[in-house]
Image (cartoon, rainbow, N blue to C red; front, side, top):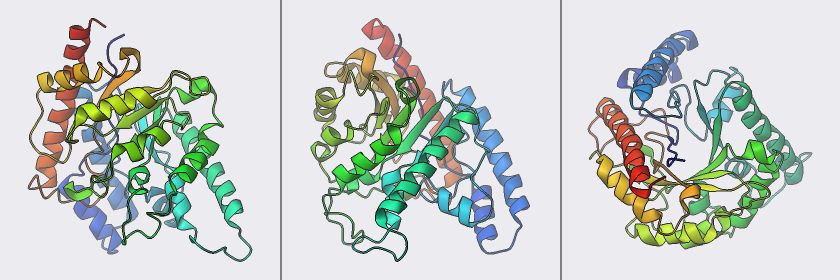
Length: 336
């Protein structure tokens, strides 16, 4: 079987859509007017992503406020949980990220932490099942907080509190509600951040995260690698920790071969070289190709390293095409 490849999630929103989001937040346009801009961006995203040869096509989260806040804006904003995902894949937020909404060191009157976590798991399970029901064939859980958990960051008071294991356990409370066959198509994404062409935890060593991350019983993992300084070290860590049997499912590691923060477009040959190098440490039946991160996790992102969100959007589709072509070249080189 050739090396599989898929996108992480988000695409840069066009400048026109970003302006519409800002005007909607300011009360200058109606929700229906915002939707018209979203529809246009979604149609363009699907058409252009299909043109790259990408097998798992999405709308690039053009309707979402961000990868992390969509449950709040969709629910508190009165629009209901979104039922308008497009095509093949959908990214959802991790229970571990939403668990940080509860006070760290106290209990709310009449609503215990455990009751909150129980309700949270129920809703996160529903989020995943609704995505499958709506037609998604792959659902990936954003776990960007995993790497950040090992950093002592004064801007995030929950960091440096040894919360990684509790994050893994909480996410498994949701993942384990699905059958092995379902979990083949439930993934975990990790990266050190990607909003506004910046990072939040790139300085945290991967050995602090990966051994614990692969304890989650998901079927596949989307792992940022392209922007790592020592890629082979990461490939080796993945190979040492990925499981052949995670409660009935063989895990697959989709390694990042595209850097969304850098406007330089990778060549298919560079992508193939990375995959061949990774195959020295990761079994080819557990190896896939992806991007380091979504290309624009938040709805408002000027993409400073790219010059404009519209240019960044054009670059994103070129990078996706290079990944798809590179995976084919690597498969031919490896004879799979």
